[in-house]
Structure formats: structure tokens, C-alpha cells
Length: 357
Image 1: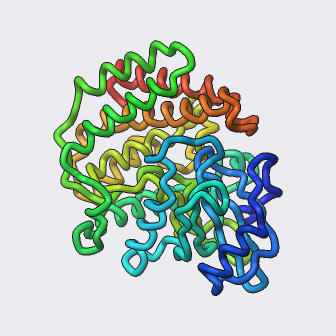
Image 2: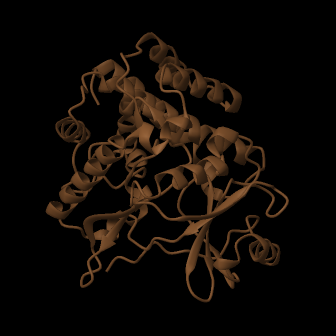
């Protein structure tokens, strides 16, 4: 049986003051009640996620990592606003409860949402899953179908258009992530430089704008478990981590998903990125074909979006690695990210040279 995504004791150096938090909640969100215990979810490399237990129910608190100074990628107010806009229009989100803008309470802005119980399929679980290939294929299909559903949301009616400016989105993203890489660069990686030259020279014609999750993958999705076996079912109960959600070219979202999508022939390092290499999963090209069929969108330039997705993931890893190297994090995982950065950049170069995903 696969266990629900479980919280663990809070990592050293990332503790929250429960007394200060409860004092804040009594004044600003008394309906939540008194927090009796705080634990931490171990997954993820970006914002920190905590489990809050009260007498009646459980909540989740999100805050930026300690030492982070990347406002755009750790904007708690933006993530809370996204969830608030989606409420009532898209039912696969945790209900947002309270947002604290001031850093005076916990050292950084944070927000609290209701917990959605479910199964998160993480790469580290892969050897223990024993999911049959037919079920794994259904899970792949459900993941793609839900991405199409997100892209079909009416950005004007819901108010999501307020989150960004769709025109010129692709170019701004490329330029912005190249700038972030230079600011966080610690080692010379020729493949990163090569991709950084290729992207601005190969901009595609942008698609009609849509709402983008921007970090859509298996381990940001909660599946409903089968009540008897405990195995995941193809029913998606929730989508998490909306910190980078915006509006723009939807193929940028698909490219980000593909950049996480490892296949059985990929290197062991890359297969640690996701469990999509398990038998039965779609191959990357099958993801693209399914998305095109369900959405009706032109995917002929998908290579560009895939290469950018790999580059962006490498930059995110570089930012985290740079924080660790500067002593802002004690998380031992972060000290081993350099080989992954090189792996992602090398994979992007190889895809460019071969002209395929």
C-alpha cells in the first residue's frame, strides 16, 4: 500500500515559532484554531511547506526558503492570490485561508491553506510503487488531460489575466531566466552558455494566451487513492505549488512538464527527476501527441519549449545550489545539485543537435 504524502519533523534551521504563529492566528484567523503541532513536508526544493495540526483539522503553511532573495519565485502573496482567483472556477486546489504579508511574524511572508489529502507520486517512491503499466498509462493520461483543463480556463472572466502580460511572454521569460542564471552562476558550464545563445535565436510564434501553472508534474499533483488497495486512481484531487502561475503561451507550460518527464533510456541522474520512466507511462512525444489531440493546439515548435524547460530547471537548481554554497541553507540535498545542472544543460544541447525531444 502506498502511504499518503507524509510530513516529518522540521529540518534543523527551518523551524517555525508556534507561539508567535498562534498569537497571529488568534488575531487574524481565529477560525483556524490553535496549532498544536508543526511538521514539515520533505519534498521539493523551493518554498518550504509545513503541516499544521489543530484539534479539528490539518492545514498547510507555505513560506519562502531561508536566505532566499528571488522575489518573483517566492512571492507568497501572488500564490495566495492565484488560489483565491481559482476558487470556485477550478476545484482541484486547496482552499486558501489567510495570507500574512509582514515578515515580522515568521521572518518572511507566508500563507495558510487547507490540506488536501491524497497520493503524490514522487521519484524517490518509484521502486516501491508496483503500479501496473496499464494504470500508469491512465495516470499519465489524467495528468495531460488536467493540464489541458487548466489551459482552457477563461483568463478574462476569472480575472487571471491580471497575473501577467501575455504579449511577449516567451521572450521575457528567456531573457529573465538568462539573467537569473548569470546572477547565480558559480561554475563555468559551457552547455548552459550554448543553450543561452540558441534560445534567443529560435523564438517561435506565440500561441493564444492561457493560464499556466508553470511547474506541472507528477509530484505537484494529488491523486485519490483506491480505498481497498491504497494504489492511486486516475482521479486528480488537487494541484499544488502555484507559486509561478501566470498567463502566457501555454506551450511554455507543456515544455516545463516535458523537461521533468524522464524516460527509461535517460541517465540515472535525470530519472531521479520524475517517475515517468516507469513502465506504462507516456514517452515525451506521446505527452505532446495527447496534448495536441485534447487541446487542438499547434505543437510543431515543441522542441523550443522543451529546451527552454530544461534550461529553466537548470537555472532553478543553480539558484538553490548558489544559496547552499553561500551558507543560506543546511539542506544536504542542495549541495549535490551541480551534476544535475550540468545534466540538464547537456540534455538540452543534445536535443538541439538531434532535433527531437
